Each structure stands twice: as C-alpha cells, then as structure tokens.
Image (cartoon, rainbow, N blue to C red; front, side):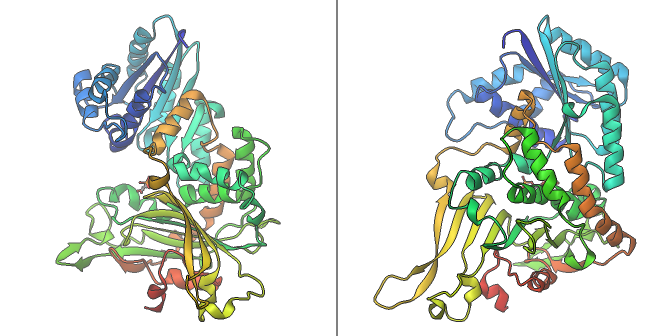
Length: 495
Ligand code: BG6
C-alpha cells in the first residue's frame, strides 16, 4: 500500500547466489508487478563498489521470460534505478548504522518494512544478524531475515545456530529457505494429491509399494569443492531438499492450507521416522573418467579438496515412516553429483494387481508391469502415470504406456524460478514454504547419528566414474527392500 515501503538488503551481494538467483528473481517479480509500489534494493558486501558498478553487475544476469519480451529493457532500467550498494564489514554495527541511514532516506515517512537476505557463508550469519537487528531493523514495520542453508552440520550445531539467531530475532522473523519447496512441481504435490479423488485414496501402504526420491546432477562440485567437502551430499541435498519432499508427500491432510497447519503435519512425518542406520545407506564418490577424448576430473582432483577425502558425492538411503499410513513402505532416496543425467523426480511404485488376469501377457517381468506415477520436478516438468495397455491389434499383448501431463505442451507459460515464489512469500509474510525450527531439528535428528558414524569410522565411499549411473551398491540397497530404481532402464539392470 501507499503508506509503506519494503527495503530488501541482499547481504553478500557480490556472491554467486545473489548474482545468479536473487537479483534475477527480484527483477522477475518487479517485471510481473508483484513487488510493492515502494521498494528499494540494497546490495551489501565488503568490496568497494559504486551504485552504478552494482547495477552493471546485476544487469548482466537479468532476463525476461520468453513469452514476455516487450518492454524488457525499459523495465530493466527502471528496476536497476532502484538498486543501490552499500559497502561494509559483516560484523560492524557502525556500517549497519550507515546502511540504516541510507534506508531511511529512501523510506522517507512511510512505514518501513525490511527484508535481509543472507547470501553469505554460515560462519558470519550471526554477526550479520546481530548488526542488522541492532542497528538496521525497522522501527515501525516488520523486519525479516531470509537464511540459506547450511543450517549447521548436525543436530548440535544447528541448535546452536537457532539459539544464536533467537538472541536477536523471534521465530516468525526467520525465513529458512529450502529452494526445492519453491519449485512448481513440489508445490503442486499437495494439489495433485488432495484435489484429485483418484490419488488420495491410493496414498498409503495399502496400494503403494515404495516411493523413490531421486536427485542427480551431470556435473561435479566444480568450483565449490571447498564448501562441499565440509558437508557432503547427505547434508547438501538429502537432509533438506529430498527430506522436505518426502515430508510433503507423506504428510496427513492438514487442517487447512495455513503455514502452521502444513508445517505441523510435516513435523509429524519427520518425527515418525527412525534415524538412519549405516546398513540402510550407500555412499559414493566420483572419480576421474575419460570419454570421447575428454577427461573429466575426479572429486579429489579439485585443489580445494583433500586428496584423501571420504566425503560422499553420492548417497542412497532407505527410510521408513512408522505410522499407520506408511508402515513398512520403503522411501528410497538417491542423490548424486557427476552422474549421467541432471534430474529430480519422485517415483511412486504401486502394488501388483491381485489375481491379475493378464499375468501371462507381460512375459516374466511382472515387477515392471505395476503402475508407476512419476513427478518430474526438473528439467522438463511433467507428471505421468505408467499404465498397462493393450497393444492395438488382433492379439492380446500388453505394453506400458504413459498418461502424460507434459508441462511444456500443456501450459505455454514459462515456469517461475523457485526463488521468485519464495522471495514473494517472504515479502508477503507467507511462511508455508519455509522451514520452522522444530522441523529443522527433526530433520537433523534423522541424519546426525549416521553422519557421525560415517565420519568417525571414515567409511570409504564406493568410487564411481564421472558421468556414470553411480555406484552399484545403490542397486543392492534397493534390492534388499525388493525395489528397483525406476529411473534406470531394464537394460541397465541386465548389464
Ligand atoms: C543446492 C545445493 O542446494 O541445490 C547444490 O547446495 C545443488 O549442490 C543445488 O547443485 C541444486 O539446485 P537446482 O535448483 O539447480 O536443482
């Protein structure tokens, strides 16, 4: 409204995330007329830069949606005029007092609302939060802080971080981002399930054999080895992105779509799970591989990674939810870097049809003839259901076909980046897609004992070639629970 203004300060403005995601998302919101009428954006970082240098840096990463190109450069210019830069140390209250003065100049007599986006390494989170809350928070409106993972590296450090943040902020001011929750198909999960009669009644151990949550990237830790080595794939992807999807997938029907109702249900799922055991996990690390004359580096070839590192770049795990709905159903997770493909998907494998009349028409591979629902989060978003179908013709032969909702074919709109939705939610005070502290604690409780054991025993990861399908151990893990990974073809299993 006309009497209020929002000031967004991107702390760590010259970092990769700010350049690649935050500024472009803010521009997209501006372009879509989603930002409030009065807003100002400040970049904050240590390096010296003028406003126009910041604008120049930011302008290089802005893009317009393919379907909305008109006025693009005019809108960019308008947007950039509202971006400013303030150089300061992360632990200097004085420098935040200077920032406060600048923000006040822009805000004038309007109600001031302030959003700080911490796009900085975790070791300086608390310094910034302390300075920002003491010296640059709003006196007559709201102050909110968006934090990016890592939220600690185990239960203890995460709890310490939460305690630290709560010295300066109340829970409602803290917006912990998990950008997977901002992805279109992850948000759609609840719509799919709770607004379609054909799915919800099947959503339980009675009809579902197993659920698979798969994340793969076709590149290594290039350039991020230093950060990654202290965390590994379990902390980088599983404990947050995949576990969040699992909780949304498996939760009971919330009382309403209110943030607290949804988050209560998610916490219940996490607390119904048993901490991971070593025997239910397989870890891997990619090694150098030469293909078509090109040599791809191994994980430990990165100069910032110790040569004897046992940090996993791949992991597969079996999890179980001990409640009435999911008792005994394996939830299998798989996450890896430097694999053969880039993909994130949820696969739901249904049980066999009891007393199937058509058993004989499938050959011997009955397992492959069960229904499978695939939610492809990225790339090329899609939801498809594998069904058995008669091959047209005089004989009685069946094959597997897809009932396919392919987003690009069905919706001509470009899908917004996850950061757009999440930034807009933070500005609007919508907390549904952010992680509450009890949720974070519950998530860490599941992984902390395993992570400690892996590290204390220095368990060696199984090596897999860069660009491959990952360690074979993942198949044995799945086989232990009578599961076959749905993302690998039948040929691959024979191989
Ligand atoms: C981040 C991880 O949270 O997610 C990265 O730290 C990973 O390692 C990234 O590459 C993947 O995000 P997206 O949106 O590209 O799938």
